[in-house]
Length: 448
Figure 1 (cartoon, rainbow, N blue to C red):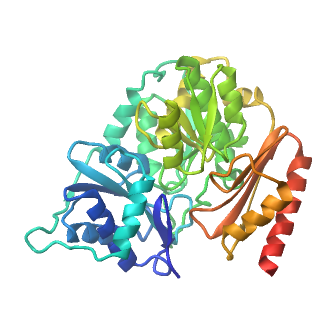
Figure 2 (cartoon, rainbow, N blue to C red):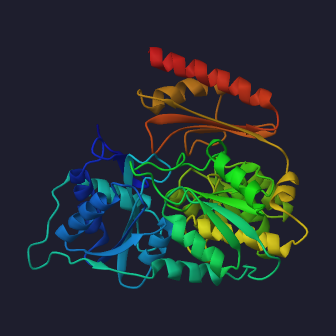
Figure 3 (cartoon, helix red, strand yellow):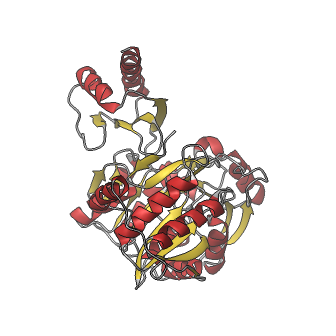
């Protein structure tokens, strides 16, 4: 089996589709791309993390880069550290929402952004060619760097829209044994929020204590904890701490799409302007932007794509419907800490409100997501779907169709060998009919 290579980097099942040799080669290529100098490395809590970290370190040193080890930190922390003077880039060792047996490298440029298209193209050229390695006088030397989480939090505390004082609040943090554990706790302390932590550690066997992706289906434990603790809200993280899902004061799991909508609603109320989300993000984001008379743009799925669309249209606020919030005035990356700060600020700025009452003020949509294995490649399916559905409204990332009251998006995954069907609407009949057609197309492609 081979690792999966996408705009975010390389990922696979450790020891199966992602080997130490793969990691060394990939890190070496990135080191040549970055150029000789310091490259920051951070990782999440996966059991394979130390082995992958050692391989990344070796690969970078072999081409003359000096690895700077941050330890266990959230991915946005690595992005921020990559922007520091004298740093050539960064590597976050994490497979994000994938189960514990997976691991990956997320590659970050000196601008703190995941590799742009030209960087990805050059990386692939390096992997296909003969890489020049350093000799004994020019091999890199590693060092450790402390304080990165503290610097990250100080940056959040300096956000101009942040409301640091107000009514007392209590939160429950479901950190799923991941990299956000110390970061989230420290941020709550600095914001004066009382908090309780659940799922603090990985299991002894190397698994996450719940399903790694913070979806409605995986957060029943957080829901119960919010009720038991009589908390104002619950925060749920993915293993590398760039995404955030919300649970309201009644233990209702309102999910990741509400995270982005809440952030847009609050930030645009004090700093109006254009905003950007990806094609698979809920219409809640459109409703939040429209509430403040702001225009919402959409981009292909993927953090770097959102960021580049934000740069194109001059947006400072944006994110993805998976719970990733971006404030370009801080840094160009999804940041669960920024999302937490938005939620806390909203509650303090609206003392008579709650997360639940805010969510209920928005239209009710049904979001349907399904992923199916696809071994034929996406192009044969694309052609068949084009015949069945007609021309798509957006073809930048698979096929995206506008529907009365919603939308539908069919795209090949960049992180798994699957095709994703995602649809949202106020009328389920649109979703049911579109999914029926999709299944017929999938069956035809598989038979062929």
